[in-house]
Image (cartoon, rainbow, N blue to C red; front, side, top):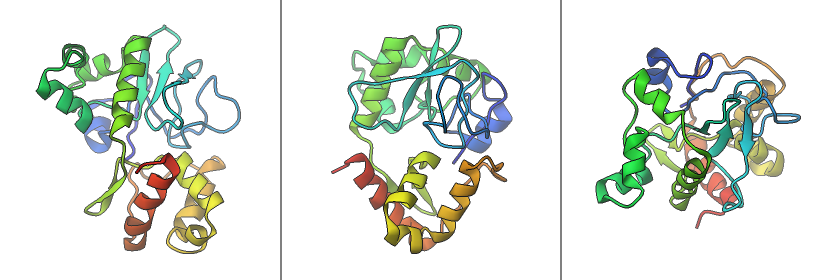
Length: 210
């Protein structure tokens, strides 16, 4: 699912509708990132916010973003993600900091969302690295988890003719339209049966998931 935000923090209304992202809007370009958005057309960090490269990763799904005020946050929003929840349940050395920043479970208040959005840089990169250790896309009922980034869907459309002319034909046309600046009419992507079968496997290949 694709969340929305107003300014820096997600409102509770947007949170319960979207429930995966923080500080994102439906505009197409994050400040500080040249050309098209590194994260796809559904994300637009505030002007002046900059994506920080995670040198531990060959390809990044959960990106660390440095805000103008020097704090850091992660897109898509990571609170409640299964790898973090397991760290908390196991009481690992990382667990106390995850708890302090409301990352062990999905944030249920604006105060918790504010904590999720206010990380120091080294911790944010550590969280991003932990999340990627178990990254795998899979069908979950009528959805795909974790939620595919528009950037990645566009890349699949550009690189795989079988998907572009087959299971993702309508999706590719839609994502190209949004990438060109069209406003996404809804914050939720619905998936056709053929996509639910083909897209998770294609994304896993894209990220080198084994």
